[in-house]
Image (cartoon, rainbow, N blue to C red; front, side, top):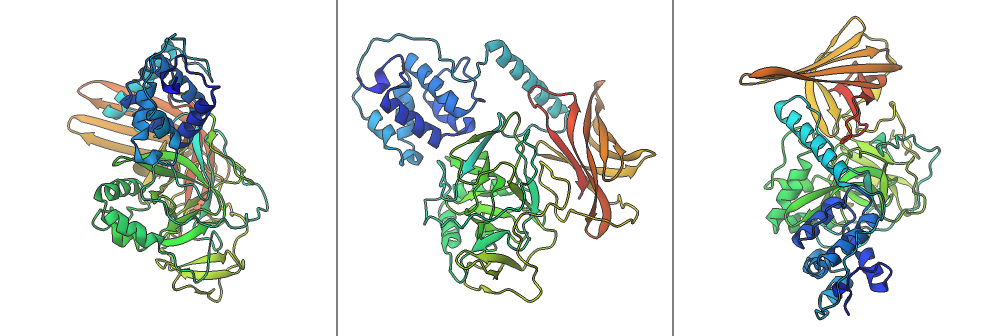
Length: 521
């Protein structure tokens, strides 16, 4: 009898093991798994998708077998072009339908169990947060991804949902040396900020022309829906839209401003897969040796293997769960997040993969205009240089430490960032520190965020915030407190500061312990 027609589902069966391995590779994230599960009409009941998918898939298949929907699930996946690399789906889907004795059993307890009351509680909490966001009380939106899932993407990883067909596989460079482990906040699987303009941040093969960039541009010109999904993703990153938002019509020209390079250390990003015409985000670690396209600010924007767009990393809630195979040398304390430089670059200083000698690659070139390093270039870095207090959120452009004693300049716009959302406001002096304020008015409704920041530069600090909404009805409000550090920085030639902290009260069960940053710009 076919595996698809047996009940209960036997995870010890060799075919079942192959099926589970293929599902885990094809759909490593809950956001990716929801679509085929839903299309098959499987009722998950108490199965929570925010556990590791290696634990969830056996329970899903058991539930599907009990409900007589396992064949529908596998047949639906077999019809998906992205499953072509796994023959198990087509082979099982083509097996004749056979009737058998069904003996439904409870869903097996693989991983932490989630009872109905807890799920309802989480739903209630999430709905409450959504309602507060809608009226402006809670301005900080939750992260796109929860559950702590971070996909490990090896240098030759294509992905289950690529934006374009596979191309030539890149060559992994020799692992770059690290003089010391980089500090990292494991609660959010953050990363050390590292300037993408740093000489030696990237590698490449000198005088080897790379056509993959232009192949991607041509592919997207023939697939406007895919191009639209890619543009929508890139426009979510302020560093991309700092001059103007990208358009589908201008995408080809934009891609031809990017430079093909190879990563010299593991980095954290938000990568994406293409599900139909929709980009599905996933938090990821890209392995050293990954080929990427870098923009004029020194930040990776496209993963060349599958053509997927890359934007700034987001912290995950809960304990980080690294999905996939850990490569030799993987160390969660040696992961960096590349930040944009403040001044557009004209050249990137790369390390030759064959000789280890540094050379210059003009920004926007594809290996056809490589030259000797220009005189006066600094020596290539051998390990990311931490120039500010290590953060778990990406830095804004040009933020670096400053040892000067000039009076702080609080002019211009300021930004508060948390859980992937930015709030624009103004900062002013107070008797004990600083104040941040944001106010928005929509008709008769006024929403205000007022924060008081107390502490000394270079030391511990506390920020207390009050969200208040007034209008038609009783006033509403919510308070929050954050603990962290104040760091002196030089930003666009001015003496300024930034605050980075973690919420200490209240802790929303649906969001967990999340970070906040306040910085100029």
